[in-house]
Amino acid sequence: MNRVLVLGGGQLGLMMAEAAARLGLVVDRYDPERALLLPGTSDLAVPISWEECQERYPVITVEREAFPETGFSAELAQSDRCVARGALQVIPDRFTQKTMLDKLGIPTAPWVMLDQAEDLPRAVADFGGVVVKARSGGYDGRGTWIVGEGGDLSAVPAVELAGKAIVEQKIPFRRELSIVGARSITGETLFYPLTRNWHVDGILRLSLAPANACSDLQAPAEIMLKCIMEELDYAGVMAVEFFEVDGQLMVNEIAPRVHNSGHWTHEGADWSQFDLHVHALAGVPLHALNVHGSSAMVNLIGTPFENAWLQHPGVVHWYGKSVRPGRKVGHANLAASSLDDLRQGLDAWADVLPEGYQQVLDSERALG
Ligand code: ATP
Ligand code: MG
Ligand code: MG
Image 1 (cartoon, protein in one colour):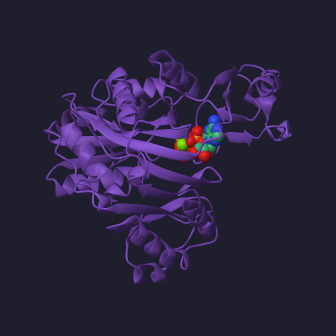
Image 2 (cartoon, rainbow, N blue to C red; image 1 turned 135 degrees about the vertical axis):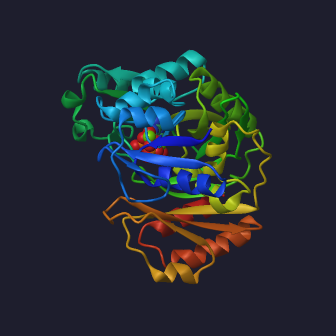
């Protein structure tokens, strides 16, 4: 492999390109919105033709699930060089994603299609609390309506969503966990330990890894992710989000790419998820993974850069994006030799973080 092309112009592709540069490999990025190539980690965008693409990139990967339906990026995503081609046919539509999980016998929240508005009250009668999810295009909780048992359904635009959404049972989970792992182009697999995640308003705020008390859950999580990657003939890093209910895992959703809940691996493991992704695509034998103590990843959301962050132990990764409410603009990684030390480090950070973090940190302590 000489060069890899990643479809998408965001921070995930940039972090892949950074990892590749350090490993002596080249990852260039193609920004579908601007229809321009971003060579390596440069932000100097240049036009590129289909022929040049064919010549230069034997392997194509993605950093997001959705692309314009037509045009260059669609053609690249569907080409047989794209290691996510199979995944892109199934994952972006929650209907086909859930259907695949059912077919594979992988536990997931009970669900039905919202074919017509009347399906919603029917699902409520069956499920109690429900979560309505747009079939495609949703992320960071957008396109998701959570209605608890006996809750008000009027906020859900059921008529508009008819045919375009699914209804899931609202799961009374104890914790949210995720697994990040990779399958190489030779079929080898490797996994990080389960990570515990906290979401506020549908957006990931905090991850802790390795999640504690998961000794019985790691193996089933790995088996499920491996089964999904094989089913989709996928290469690269993939993540699965889980709910933990009664000591068992239930899949929430699949992300066919490097994942926000794996960002702790930048400082928390010998090889980050970005290194692993590049290695999996290059087909080099997947190395043993050493994880260093306990790690926390705090998402920096809709906030300007604060110099005060640099006064605390931890590493800030800033994406250089314009700041908008609810937008992920960076993350900070903290590492410590024990969970207690990590909690002390997080306490120091809580003083310099925007509102909303304290409740997450408090719930981390409350739930243990
Ligand atoms: P992401 O940014 O991770 O892609 P998303 O917008 O695709 O998020 P989901 O991950 O499906 O949406 O849901 C967002 C959050 O909503 C979950 O992390 C979880 O906290 C809550 N949630 C989703 N589905 C359910 C469910 N069936 N029961 C209970 N809570 C749920
Ligand atoms: Mg999602
Ligand atoms: Mg999610």
